[in-house]
Length: 291
Image 1: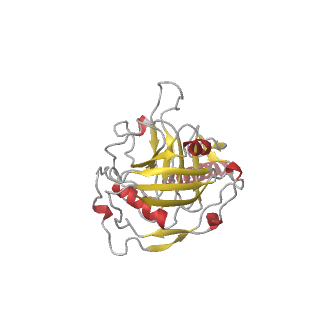
Image 2: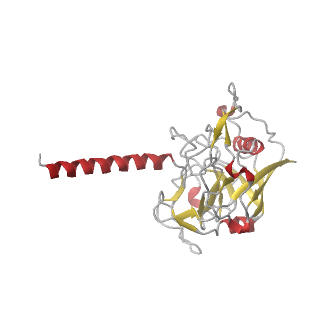
Image 3: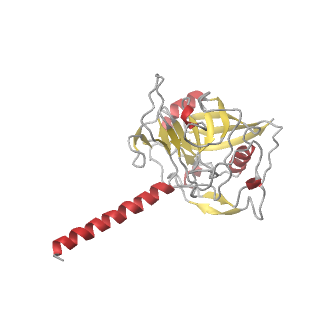
């Protein structure tokens, strides 16, 4: 064939392969995205939103909805054992709220074999105190409504996976998302576990809810998000999820709001959304108390 025609076809083939590679990367990335328009604040018009997440795993099957630890929480040989570490991608150089990066920001984050053994007592109350660059947030964990989710969070917090991670996605008016040991939206704790649907708490009922991001049924990991407003379209039956709600903000709502106001730029993985932070908000530590 003529040289120019051949060159054009080769160029088109290369571009198509590049697009396919980029699409594969995007499918592996954990993100929460609005898929049917925009969220209109202050009106009755709330469009469909969807939470995606991978935690390093592809989604398959159908959601498993349970109010008690499921079979996936059963300890397999070596469950809970550290299997290695991962490095965290660089965060923005400027730290929000006049803070500085904690020493753990550059420390490799642990990975584990899982799902982790069940160690919590659902008859007790668990509270997480999350220290961030912008202040402290107190989270009441719902061990009765999402026992497996709470058990996982307590385990990872006690093993310091979250220390030095940062909120890699801040979607104003929607959510703040963190908990990724890799810091780029693609990481997790080294395993995935069952999706629980909390029977007592709905996204439509309140803001400040703590839930797991996922990439489909039974792909919860370490990444979490806190809602900045009521989000009825994240509830089951709205065409999204399901997502495991495992806690709520009881103090530090002003801190959550402050984090949600950090300057952002366009997110290349989510057309039309500005959710890539221009300043880093670190999770300095998470401490668990039991009552």
